[in-house]
Length: 153
Image (cartoon, rainbow, N blue to C red):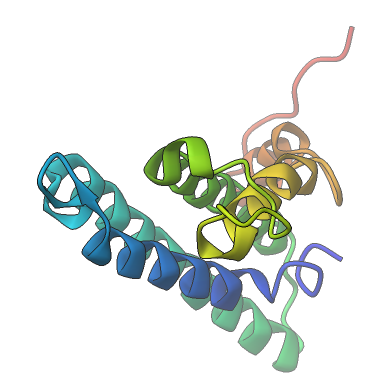
C-alpha cells in the first residue's frame, strides 16, 4: 500500500509543479511576473528537487522489489517524503494563487481549473492514510537507522 498507493505521486506532483511554473511565468504581481519573485523561484526550485528525489526513490524501491530484496523501511521513507512534498506543493500553490486558490473548477474565476484547491484539500488525509508520518518515521528510525523503539507508557 505504501509503495503502490503512492507510486503515482511523483508524476502527479511534476505536472502540478509545471502548472505552477507556467502560472508564475504568465501572472503579473507588483508589475512583474510572479516568476521574478526570488522567494517563489527558490521554493519552486526546492520543490522540483524534492519531487525528483521522490521519483528516484520510487524507482529504486521498484527495482528492489523486482530483485526480490526486502524493503523494511524504504516504503515508509518514500511515503512520508511523497506525502509531505505533496503538502508543500499544494501550500505553495495556494499561496501563489492567493484568493483564487480555494476556488473549485465550478467557479468561473478558478485558476488552473481548480486543481490546487483539490490537491490542497486531499493532501492532509494522505499523510494519515497508509500510516501516519509520525508512525512511519518510527519505522525508519528502528528498521532503517537501528535506533531503539520508543518506550511505551
